Image 1 (cartoon, rainbow, N blue to C red):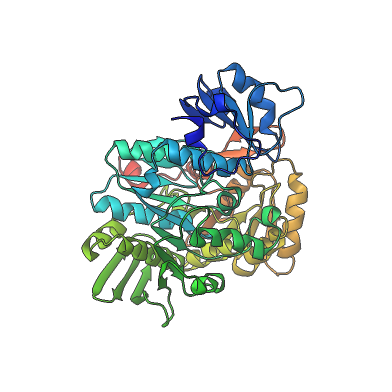
Image 2 (cartoon, rainbow, N blue to C red):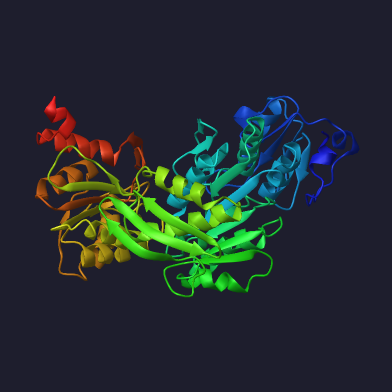
Length: 498
């Protein structure tokens, strides 16, 4: 495929020399370390590093040319193609290079502040129950078939997505389910993709360090439903109970399916039974009837299950397959995940890192008939500071004891981050303990627990690292909690019996 063919539809500012336009392209890359002979190298401006600084390295490795929205450096003499938008150009080129597989596969994109990961796992579980070979991409990991592919972002770069589509297609796969972050939509990582179904979970305060206002945050999410460089999705699955989601009701194009707990939702649960063992409820929609049995717990997961059922229905899957897929999804890593070493109180790890998510997690803890809820949380550094006091207030209002600690402080002073959260905590009368060392804080939370309590370790969930200004260390809340419990002599019942 030639340069001219690959850049068809791309807004090129500088023009492409005739000799280069007819050159055969062997690959695309945005990481100069992976460039080989005959590749086009795409250089993006970054928040910390300008990709242009790697252009010379890419040429040394055999790149035909550099594609960038920025002009070439004054001392750069190799072919340089200036485009209107670097990531849009890469998305268009990758789509063409890999044969427009997004138009062959059935893509489901899930966006919103909370619930994306759980909803994506549920949808994928249903598709696998239907016998489909699938791709799943999101916060925890990316998987194509049974192969795990490490990624750095919730939504990978467009080139990586198209590579995964090609891998899925080679396996005979048909369906891809993806978490679509607001960053991915704003930056153009999913530009020009054709989605079969788009799902909206909810919108609450988050990422305002990047988007600045809630309106800007919503505008980024809205792109998934209007079509970002591509057509609007065929179906839009929308949360009737969320104010921001209802604003998508005026969209033309997608067929809308509304889910929720209220009477005006098209798909809603009936006869809800919620316990420590999970959820049971019925759904009826048009001629279909579903008997939902899930091991996920809490009201928030009713929404996730409803969204997943609606998405599955857009794929024309029968009720019995949807029921089987929901039942097969036993749990999601770091999403209200229990750590059980035979202790007489519950310890759960949850990824909740916004005030709304924290409120939901504590509410779920309350459904376990807890005598007390002990909540441990921290806030990330170099992220939206405005949510810190709100998280402190949420923890204080709903918990019996709060342990305030560090999350991923990054370049910020952990004590300053905690001071921002204390502002909200002090709006309540709840006792709180400050411990910057997260491992020590987890041990303190477990030390404070008594029979019948619930210890909620919030914020990091599935993450296995902690990021400081000068280093990143291995850190897993689940491992630390398990070690602390074992130090007290607790053991799982099976182990104790042996």
